[in-house]
Length: 135
Image (cartoon, rainbow, N blue to C red; front, side):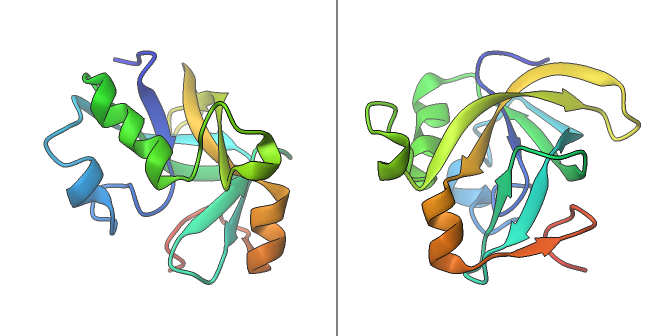
């Protein structure tokens, strides 16, 4: 069930991803395959970034965190501090429309979008099929 602490993840926080054991395992109440509109990029540093624009699909998972402290740790990992300006953050946490893999609306969830400065720093390459890791 989606909540105010549901987040769409598309990279290292997905089940089986590098950060899943530390940040998600045993801390989420729901794990739902999903997709959102946008563009996925390989940043060549072991994790991807997205821009929430365009009509492409990004494949991922919606995670729901019952405890606020666990949810808040994602902001730390993603380099997002709500009181900083967009330019001072590595990623921004934004609300997005989310869909099932079949395209049925699931509602709004949080997602982390890289800033333009982050993109420029890593010279990302677009992943056309919207799947991370690259198969």
